[in-house]
Image (tube, rainbow, N blue to C red; front, side, top):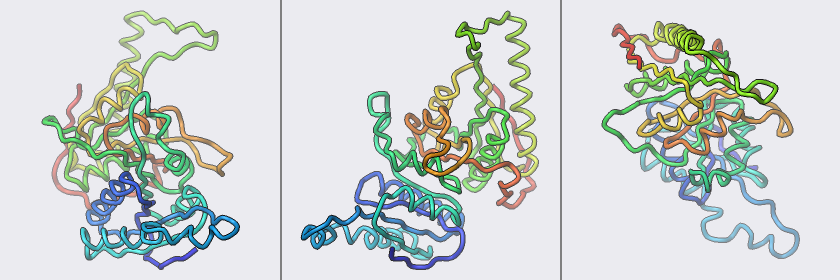
Amino acid sequence: MSTTPTTSHPIVVGVDESAQSRLALDWAIDEARRHDLPLELVHARPMPLRGPAVETAFTRPGVDGVLEDATDRVRQLAPHTPVATSGGHGSAAPMLVDASRDATMVVVGARGRGALRSAMLGSTSLDVAAHAHSPVVVVRELSQTLPDHPGVVVGIDGSPISEGALGEAFHQADARGLPLTVVHAWFLDYAGTGLAVLATDAQMAELAQEERSVADDAVARWSARYPGVTVREHVLNAHPVQALVDHSKGAELLVVGSRGRGGFGGLVLGSVSQGVLHHAHCPVMVVRSQPETVPSRAAVSAAGTQAVTS
């Protein structure tokens, strides 16, 4: 593997020859400029073949030049951003997971969206999102601005993992000067017998109030650290994947938490994270950090926080 050194905690970007990789690179360049961070570009080459074919495997136009072209793109869009490169033979996912150990985040591209194309998200994107040691941003398409801009969107469920995602979402919204839309979607699951859990109107009202309190408490903790971020809370009885996908329309970023990390034979992404990655209308950040590991990375302003609920 060839490596050019960089400073600590860069934004790591997986690059190749695809259009999706260019979108991911441009997103990462913008993020690096916003947070004054270096970039590390990682390109995985296929394992060389045995025999004479190995001599021509890496002389085709565009293969050896992937890192050079990506570096030129960084210098064009962000000439003052430090950039390093790393390349080697093998699968991209393990290389990116390894690079994530010292990264602020990893950014990767992904293929199409929708019911028929959801299976084509790409194994690299899913593997990296499931196993990286840092937050992972999957960029399939850039957001289309809507009149009622949702800003940064985050999904929460009251768990410690979603607490970490909420902290990162506050940080992202603060850095962008955007509002934060907090989505807490809850729905009655099925009992172990396979029969739907039934509830009276009074029980549903009580559940709704409990879930509202969960969201209010979580938002209050982070609003104290980011008083300049305007927050909109949406607490609704709906499937969380559908609710988050709906709210991702026009958003700049959707942040979700996901359960543990292990070797490639270990834990995988949760169903909500996978569903959102397949169908969201904007870049998606997957966060597994526990709340105590999510720093308050922006200066606290004197402005107050507005909370808008619906």
